[in-house]
Image (cartoon, rainbow, N blue to C red; front, side, top):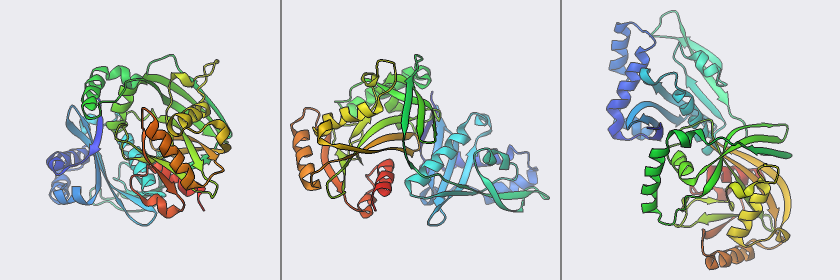
Length: 383
């Protein structure tokens, strides 16, 4: 069974306490020290309620967990990050750390902070953390606990060029978990009957340097993507790369779509756009992301290329989501544009949009339904 990430519940308390104690003991602490640790350190229902806690489970059983809380206006504290001994050295701690970074970005925080175990400093250093100070370890007399931080990079950058190719190899995640994916999709169709298992592409590796985005994609089923997304993106080597049409009205407002109940992202708010699929390939086998953006623009809003003026091309990093966004200036007032788009959507067979949200100021970005990358885009583009 695939690894899955999910929010912790109060029912997880015994299992998480057990992982905490066994993971700590795996460093080889003396039994008398571990007895003190077990008595003082336990996960309680109050812990679960007060922190943002994520459980990694396999075969329905927790094998690792993290616990996060805001420390200041710009800092996220990693209170807990523990992996059961039998699940260590499998990349699970690294995955939880990456998702902690994603959570910080979603909250608009710019820094991670933690107090490491006396033995775990090298693990965090390899992942970009630096030691600010130390304090003596009560568990290991003579050793120090490093107090560590990791500044987070900005989310949005300008793109000068794109070079994205498609591999002829299948997506490894889909191949490894085909049976579980099929079962999950059948259940998903009961909730959303109009789900269609088409073909899409997922990014399996990339480099962004000096404004150039180079990447490789693998073709897969939508069912595989949906399972991967809903299971907490447990394969950290893959990303959901997609295009976004960032509509900017005559007065400088941004227009985001509110997704309808007929979609797999019902209620979420973000710029028109969608997944890349095999029709978005050029003759030489490259992924035409900008072409895909214009395709989605037409399908969702009814606007044609001649209706917009392309401005900057942006990439927004949002954890396992990566948006390539084309800013498009439309020489019409926002209210008029909203009316025209909704009229088109209501007349379409798909009816993907339930509404259009006009974003005029940064205060309009505070709605929790706005997807984090869309919030980052708005903060970048609005004064």
